Every structure is written in structure tokens, then in C-alpha cells.
Amino acid sequence: MFPIVRARRVRGNPALRDMVRETRLHPDDFIYPLFVRSGKGIKTEIGAMPGNYHFSIDRVVEEVGEAIEEGIRSVILFGIPDQKDAVGSDAYNDDAPVQAATRALKESYPDLVVVTDVCLCEYTDHGHCGVVKDGEVLNDPTLELLAKTAVSQAKAGADVIAPSDMMDGRVGAIRMGLDESGFETLPIMSYAAKYASSFYGPFREAAGSTPQFGDRRSYQMDPANIDEAIREVALDVDEGADIVMVKPALAYLDVVRRVKETFEMPVAAYNVSGEFSMVVAAAERDWIDRERMVLEVLTSIKRAGADIILTYHAREAARLLR
Ligand code: PBG
Image (tube, rainbow, N blue to C red; front, side, top):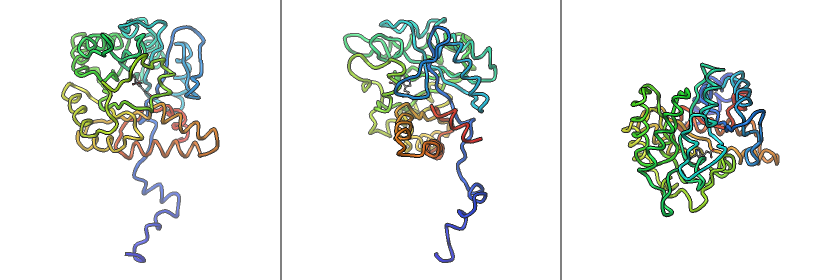
């Protein structure tokens, strides 16, 4: 009891504070998301995500070179296709931007971990993550297209396959597709507990993937549910997921913690576009200290139990941690 016990004794000296720190961020924790498109010499800023761009392949190679200098060792790629159709053909086109960027990045930086996002929403003209019939997003017919997408990305040299579509059975379908094509050693990081969240707003501008009718609530999870997250993660683990993700991160730290404690698997958390843009917007108005907030946000995600953090702050945070 006080005055014998004084919690402040270990807080007075910066070196001592560092010694008793329980959670330490490191650039190894981060996966840096990037948006790739066709063309040459293109680097167009995304309005709702300042400091993030649509890159042509040549420019993404430059960007990643700089990120590597700063300590980043992994990226996740999202594609902006030239055309969209009802079945998302460019998702599984071997020459589409994600596949081309994967080949270029692995050629330039063999040690880089290239994660590829598997989903149809960027590639469908209706903006949904699966095949649509009579206004409904169909589950089972979508699985084959997702598996085809994963195999196409694997052939391009992807190191980790990351399905984000939330169809039932997709991890199993992708695992089987990969194994049949000789990629049985390629890991799957599944967006296992992915919520139907308002925090994806800026990403949908970035990826041009806003649903043209309805919303994603018939396949993404209700933000109110946590037991269901455990069931979702269990399914993905049973189907062969190697890393499980909770998304978004900040409003779902309780889910991150529970998933980590329940499964004792590598857990990733996605610090999504809306979480990023809120920090950036408040900092632009001088309402908050951006650098301190970035590190605080990322530290909280790791403290909650995430081993891996997907974040648009990756380069900035890696610089701050030097
Ligand atoms: C695709 C996908 C989305 C995000 C990652 N993959 C958008 C969505 O589900 O609408 C969101 C990422 C972010 O907001 O940063 N299904």
C-alpha cells in the first residue's frame, strides 16, 4: 500500500521506462498496403487517404524500394483493374496489375514478403465480393473464382494469400486450389473475422469498390458480435488458415485479444483506411499530435494481441521507430 508502493518510481527516467515497457513495436510487425494499376510513370494520390497512391508497376517498385530502406519487409497488394465485369475476370487474369506487380516486386526484391488480397469486389462491375444473381451475392459459385484468383497470384510469385471476401468455405476452396497446383507450402492469411464496417469508407474510394446496390451485411459480420468471430476464426483454422486476421483493428481490440487467447495462432489486425484517415484528418487540423498518435494506435493493436499489423502508417511508423 501507499506510501510503501509508488507506481511512479519506474516512470521518472526515460531509460527505466524503456526497460519496463511491455509492448514494443518493430517494423517486422507491419504489412504495408499498396494499390497497383496498369500504365507507366503513374503515382496518383488517393483523395481520402493522403500519402497513399495508385501506382503503376514501375512506380510501385520505386515506392517499395524506399519502404525497404526504412525497414519494411512486407506489402499487401490491391489491384485497380482497367475493366470490371460481372464475374471479376481481372482478379484471375495472369497479366492483371496485382500479378504483374507481384512478379516485378519479387524480381527486384526477392526477400520481400508479397501478400496478395483475394477478393472480387475491386473487379466486379456491381462492386460485391462474389457472383451476383437476382440481387443476391451467391456463395458457392464464388468459391471457384476465388480459388482461381489465388492460384493466379501464386503463379505470379505471391508469398502469402489473403482472402478478404467472407464467403463461407473459401479458405478450404483456396487451400485445395493451391495444393492441386503445387502450392501446398504457400501460407494463407485469412481475413477471418471481418466486420461490415463504416471504417472501410476511404478504401472503397481508393479501390473503386463501393457496392452498386445494397451493402456487405449479408456476408461481412455484424459489429455487435464477438462469439461469432470465434466461430468464424475456428472455421478458417479448420480449413487450413495459417494466420488469422481481425478487421478492422481499433474498434475491435477486444476481438483481437479473444482470438489470440482462444487460438494461439499468429494473429493479424488490419488498421483500416478509416482508422488511418481519421488520424490524418485530425492532424491536418492540428487537433492531435500525428506522430505520437500513430505509435499509440499501433502499440494498442499489438498490446491487444496482434502479431502482425496491416497499416497505411507502416513507412511512417518504421521511420519513427528508428
Ligand atoms: C476487399 C477489401 C476491403 C478492405 C480490404 N479488402 C474493403 C471492403 O471489404 O469493403 C478494406 C481495407 C481498408 O479499409 O483499409 N473486400
